[in-house]
Image (cartoon, rainbow, N blue to C red; front, side, top):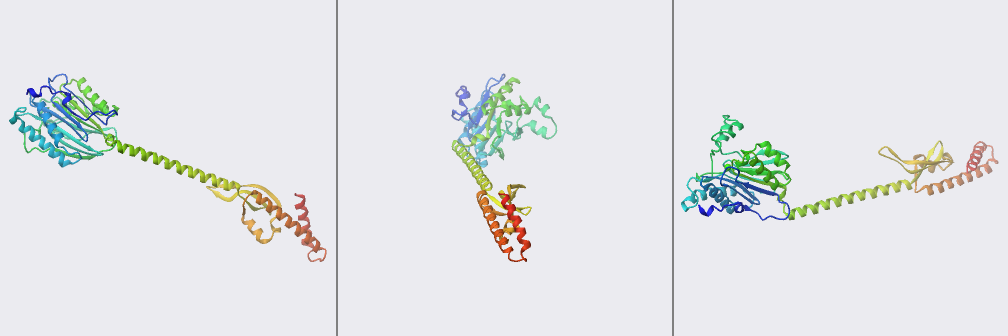
Length: 400
Ligand code: CA
């Protein structure tokens, strides 16, 4: 298959690299033991995929690359599960037919784990033992179930995860692209959340390093590219017995530049609204404070008229007034209408207004006293009240 011997990383399907840090990253390495890298990958948002070829004599490379080619040609651009399944089935047929056209060789095959991530909707098609993992709120979960003898035996309780790692049949897979024309992929559909991190990897990652290590790396790597690099490095450091491929996608990255701009705009608008509300509230409090502190009222205090600053109310148990002074004006000396209003607390516009009212009352009482004194001399019947009035008038005057 000479036309495929130049297969290198540059043959992988990669979206153009923009200046800003990307929401996805990928890395594939041949490892320390294998001569060829039979893994292939696709990172063409919203499509991401990993394929792990098998077949020997470079046929694995042909199979995985062919499957990825067909998938990227036919996969839908939305999270359409049926469309993705059809694309995977077409990839299967293309790998089956290829040897008859002189491409690859009979018996070649590949795994295929393909994901479409549209906003927060994730659809995965699974064939073989490559895996999809999701890191959600810092916790790693394996999304896909392996189509492998080991997975079946573990499920049947015949084997533990640890035993499976060193089992001689650990690489036997029970479903693959390239053998059965009626093969159907398993389909997983799930809602993910912004902040989640998706990993697609070949078994050269997840058989070399264990899930807790994968989880740690996925939690700690600052970017998806760093995460892919760290996962592959860890697999190589653990021995690198197999080709190691990782595709990492951050869910938050799926907002378009336009959506992000819109989001920033909405955020600024929301902050503006909050500031406006705070300002209006502060202005209202200030106005209320001004109103209260400029207000005044008259009330009775031990039979005398007292001048209060503020209003005769309470707010949250706090009195909104303070006594300014108690005058010498006796409430009962005022005309009954005014006296009653003062007993109930009589609001006046301001302290000045209160002061001028008090002066009026004093003058009024002084006039009353003068009149009663005059009339008092004319008849004995009113003598007693007259003398009282005189005393009070004197008191009022001495108080001035
Ligand atoms: Ca492999």
